[in-house]
Amino acid sequence: MNDTEWFASTLRDWFLQNGRKLPWRDQPSPYEVWVSELMLQQTQVVTVLPYYARWLERFPSVQALASADISEVLQLWAGLGYYRRARFLHEGAKLIVDRYGGTFPDDPEELKKIRGIGSYTAGAIAAFAFHKDTPAIDGNVERVISRFFGIDGDLSRGEPLKLLHQTAHKVAAHGHAADTNQAMMDLGASCCAKIARCAACPLAERCFALKHGLTEALPTPKAAPAKTDEYRACLLLRQDDGRCLIARRRSELLLGGLWEFPMITICKNSTNAASECRLPRHLLWKNALADIPNHWNTSNIQITHVFTHIKMTVILDTAQCATFEPHLNLQNATYDSFNSVSLKDIPSQYAISTLMKKIIKAAQRIDMQKTLPL
Image (tube, rainbow, N blue to C red; front, top):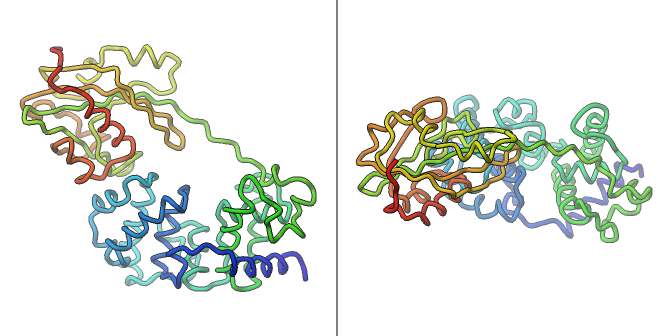
């Protein structure tokens, strides 16, 4: 028995005894596979489970998702991060209903025509929902294949990428690709995690990395993306009746479609960021507001949040006015809609980011009565 055949057979046997019991694995529909795979991108299974259950309760079919308003979709997604995934699901659902009559195509190449479905997700839908013998290569699968077959180099490009895909296709061609793919995912999340536990691995007998002492070296580490430092000021503008001004970010931006207190960028990647943050911020807000509110307070409250490529520091300012209308000049490249709402009602009524949740907690600690005249 050659290595690929032995690899596939051994993995399937192991999976039948040790595979994780997950809600999207029990005779899933293409829609259920699609939702689960997008939720699982860069997110742990334990985090996804409650979101997946709530999502299917509210949007049990692709038709239900397609007919939903994007604001409700984003609100249900809030907390999972990487909100572009939710927008891809919503846009894709509309396309599947309009172009394919609500029925998912079973061909991976056709599936990849749907925005947000790449090679991995297309392979997962084809294998898990349509029982096609196609590979589904995620990070765990990369690690298992790289170690067992001894594939080194940058697996995202060039010859290593080509060899990875050739090997994955050979494994899938032995049949039962759904079980084999899921077995590699589960093995990569357990025995063959970043820190390998080779003594418990069913593949240890023939593993190249174990044989040559390369379990820590394979797969070849990818260069970590450089993070951009970004400094913003955020304005908690409150009317005399207590309601706060919130704004919705344009869909094409980071955190697009989500609501927040209005923000302006102070600086990016500046060696003098700290001193720039101490500049009189009412001068910066003058460019964003049609009229500066009468009562103003610049604070020293800072909220830090790390995105994939951005480390963002937000300084929270507060202001009070009789009504918002004279001050609005923010409907620009950043925001497309505004509303006023009680601070306590924002989390339950609007789709907001984890960063915004942090800002709201900070805002709740501020005594709005202690504002200073500008």
